[in-house]
Amino acid sequence: LGALLMAIGHVVLGASEIHPSFLYLSLAIIVCGYGLFKSNVSCLLGELYEPTDPRRDGGFSLMYAAGNVGSIIAPIACGYAQEEYSWAMGFGLAAVGMIAGLVIFLCGNRHFTHTRGVNKKVLRATNFLLPNWGWLLVLLVATPALITILFWKEWSVYALIVATIIGLGVLAKIYRKAENQKQRKELGLIVTLTFFSMLFWAFAQQGGSSISLYIDRFVNRDMFGYTVPTAMFQSINAFAVMLCGVFLAWVVKESVAGNRTVRIWGKFALGLGLMSAGFCILTLSARWSAMYGHSSLPLMVLGLAVMGF
Image (tube, rainbow, N blue to C red):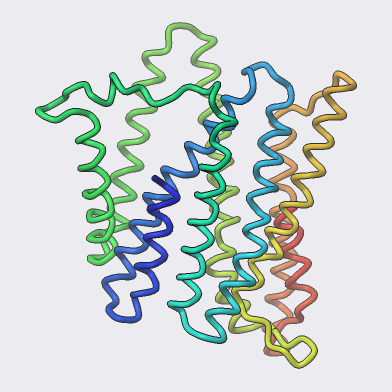
């Protein structure tokens, strides 16, 4: 369902050339689709391993690396289609890729027969006049509409503030209901790691916004007489992530064989350190462009690659 919503969202995004309102609607559909897709894929992979299986980290690293194969191909293909034809063609190609991935997933669904299926009894249970599956349908329609209105009316900042306050309230309630000190300690660890994870992704997601704008305006993108489309630079980060993911999976495998493990704090520190190093390189690139009017292509590539690692 999430993959299908993302495909529909990209098709609607291609229609934003017709009317600007399609832009907000398409982003809302993609956001909902991504939320359904990303969380459930991670949970499905988690069910393939026992909770104490030391190979879990390696499995997630491989999934992350494999997902970035598409992240390498998509910016190159869609960026070229947009540059040579139109925005609609680029977004349409992204929708085709999403459908292709969905078909591959459905064809391989037989490998997940031992995982827990849909709890049909819970779906059919009635709450507030409607069965739960009916409320799911209402949410699928109402959520994109609500997000569209928030974007359109520029209320998104206020909505995020309200959502943050509600989220903190829910966390406080869960913490108060903890039965013992061990549960409180584990909840504190989860909140701390979530905070650092939010910081990491806030910086990482700049690649599709502020960094892309900087590349488009201040980086010399000419290479052998060809101007590299800005979208293609997204493949650099994905390629670095793929290489690093394969390497980390191998490290985990060797660590398990030698009864050695890397603490989760060390992994977080390494990730944030490399992200910081990448932004330091981008800072040098920004100073270069301030002095000479534009920055060099190799320096930008190096910064994005380090961020990917």
